[in-house]
Length: 368
Ligand code: DOR
Ligand code: ZN
Image 1 (cartoon, rainbow, N blue to C red):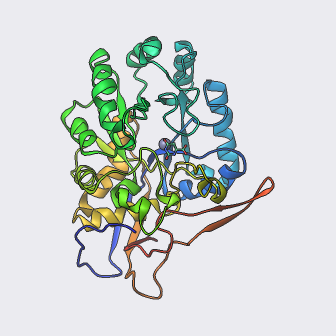
Image 2: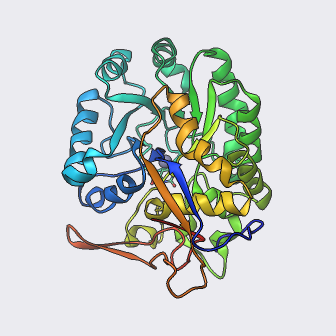
Image 3: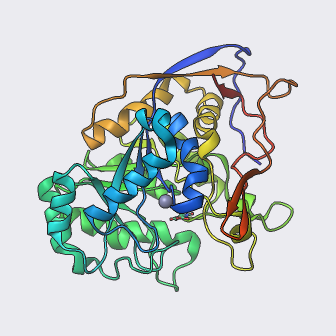
């Protein structure tokens, strides 16, 4: 299903070592689903910015600290020792600036997430009007707490494929002008317009790019039938946008960094009459990015994107460990192949199965 770029001619067995990467945007969920998915992220990444769109959303430092504890407990001592969940606050019309100040001072909140109300999964409690949260944004600008943005307008009159570009014009650019000192990450960008906006803006504006938006365009959603496993928000766009994202990710520009937006939903929730948005890419995330950088002839830019640009933007130290990737021949019988589905036990009354991104594919790089 992946739309490959140019291929490289290097040989199987070749290795690359990367400074241990971080995931600057992930959904770890809660309860049984969290128990099932959290290890996949902790195995690859040293830190992760954990999204707060639970039900109810994470709107207090105490709730975030308790959630962090549940994540670490689910990992068990060995994986927990090598993984730091970086918690985020869910911005709502009723959140008070004091809560953000407290959460940051206690090293619980590393950022706050703006969900325009109604834009995506569990965003009903999000922000209706940016003017309402001006005091929160002023506080964040003053204390240096980054604003993470789901950048889509919710106006039903705007075509779903245009919602990101319209958000940039109507909401993001005026917001950046009102808060010139605010650090902003435009999350999971999907358009050439977003990539250009971030490349042209100053160092206060950055963007995360997911593996799936680098691999698929909107045709994937309809290839041979309706394909719920490729449905996420913002929805994948035309091929020219995918190519612009590939160029941005592999450019070496420090404004672009890794954020998987891994967003697991059980099989039943994806294959429903009204299926949930989200692609579960955590188990093979770094392999997925490595395939893209390889196809673009830019493996030398992978470490910056995966392991350096994010910490520099957030003002955090670089990780010390390393991760090794080995080239494999995807045609060979020994090649590691992404499972068609992951059976993850019971969640209440339902059996929990997830379909990972790249299901059934052998990728050109595998984790050692
Ligand atoms: O595809 C998505 N899934 N996009 C989002 O913005 C939210 C996420 C989720 O939480 O499922
Ligand atoms: Zn997300």
